[in-house]
Length: 455
Image 1 (cartoon, rainbow, N blue to C red):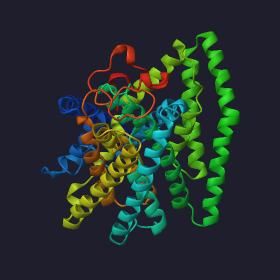
Image 2: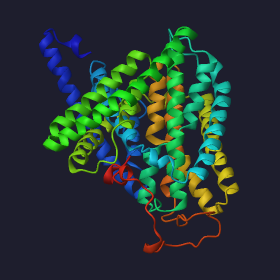
Image 3: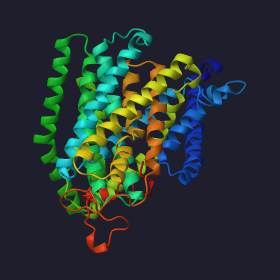
Image 4: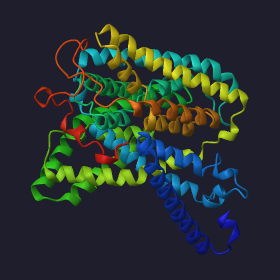
């Protein structure tokens, strides 16, 4: 330990912070290199960031003589690196909430609702089946008392999630946003994620409460918190945005928004649910319809900060992935997890899509897109690990499952969907959509999803 090696507390603290800087530098540089390598493979940035974390952890770097992973990331520095990572995560969750425009949920609502509900239900059922397989072989961490119900609820949620930001970025890159399949995918993924976050909030409340009455109290406080945001905070925030816009005070608005993110995160932590829900909820209630340059610049500043700090979160997450901890049974459990995760999403998406009149090619495209989990899955898994719901081996399997299920989405054909027009998608012409026939589907909030660096 660094602090054990030095007698002077000041010198020890200085060296600790210096090592934090070294760790951050190595993380960011490794991510930059792997992102460049990931582009020809058609993979989103998050894949490279998670791979960087796995490479810098015990699974690869730790296999070298002398355990260089522990020399590079000493125990004294890891809490500080985790704090930096959490800031990046909270900024991202706020932006995710801000980009979750209610108008998006109304786009292609009929088809999207059937796809979302069927995929979510079947995936959740597959998660419960997986929980029955894993529960007896993965006791909760020491000091935790997690019953099968909470464990099954968490795994059901983890398998039901869809990585909305990854999906949105893939659609944009493949020029599918102005197609029927793109419309349905965006709306269904948005609905999926909103429902999954609600399930995760319920799981968090049950996991942290020692008694059913405490869980009920947590849920009541959570509902009261959301109502307070909608009834009181949102109007006040709208006033603050108007006044800051009138004065042209970008710094003032940026400070108000950033403070709101951290205060809401603290509030949900105090209530008994994860801090990410506070940041996400604050993003959802952000005023919309404002296209002025000031609001856009504030959002851009937060996106840039998040894009710089969020890779740290994924690398810190990847450091906790230990492939060496998986035995023969562990690899079989991983295979079962991947199979059930894919079955739930692919079948749960394909059946309602085909019944709704979607042709075979668009059905395959939609199913692959809905099966992407990426960074959203990592956030869910990290929450489960911090709550003590899952152990390190399930966490490692979950991260690998997220990577495996996200890879195929990067190979979806460019322009593979039919033009968005009313009615069925069956028997529509293939090929590029004429400019006159294209209809913009993305609401303004989605058009700038992370620019060229979408996750």
